[in-house]
Length: 300
Ligand code: NAI
Image (cartoon, rainbow, N blue to C red; front, side, top):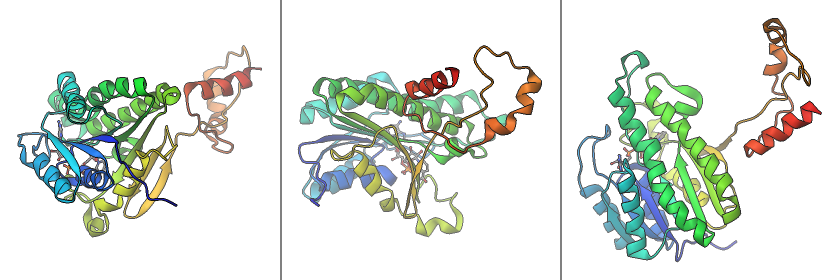
């Protein structure tokens, strides 16, 4: 099988000045992509700003014979999203790949969470991905080619103490990715998400004794494969870390069919909880239409 290449592809990787994003940007650059390395260069809580982080990733790509430019904008505003995509267009003429990876943490238990902690985290993770992806999507739609990768988290998909803001933002990204995969289907635009587990500055205090086995380089191959031309997957989510690569899916159980025109009581519901909860024979809808088809079938 031939090597997977990214020649003549233009990739934007947000938060590529360090951690996971840096590994993606370096590999895409090594495999021929022209890379926009976006990073605000701040602290893990989103405070501060520096050009150093993005610059050193660009320097490493160029030193390895690749092509890259830096972008220092925060993804957190629509203007900055447009500017980041504008940087790709101005430097390389287009955009083919967007890896939404920039992230910060403001962990607090739900009772102690301040509105500012919610806003900061939503701005970077959820709105940030929206702001960068929308102008890129328009370009991709016009040329009928595009690849998106969103960075979700087990903290939202499965839940984690102290991360209500982060978990909500990370689940929101799955909604965004799912809709882009539906809207992009006719235009050869694929959209997927990962929930990574890796040792970075964001997690080094959190991962405990397994830290040494959670190399960011183990996340990189899946992330880069998912934005390659030969990847036909879309609407998918993967857990990736420590050398394990596993699909995460949203299944729809067969459920309890009360019947067409029925008006069940609360007690009827209580008496059928077991059937609603039974996951045997579940399906995995790839759009709302798939779910509606199941419902229509049940109503026949
Ligand atoms: P990291 O802190 O090393 O990398 C995040 C990068 O994003 C930093 O370089 C930071 O400067 C940049 N950034 C932050 N705010 C930005 C903004 N407004 N605009 C542009 N750049 C910005 O952390 P890591 O672990 O590499 O995180 C990458 C992504 O993976 C994040 O979205 C994170 O939430 C997610 N993630 C990581 C996990 C892990 O185990 N490391 C687990 C689950 C999710």
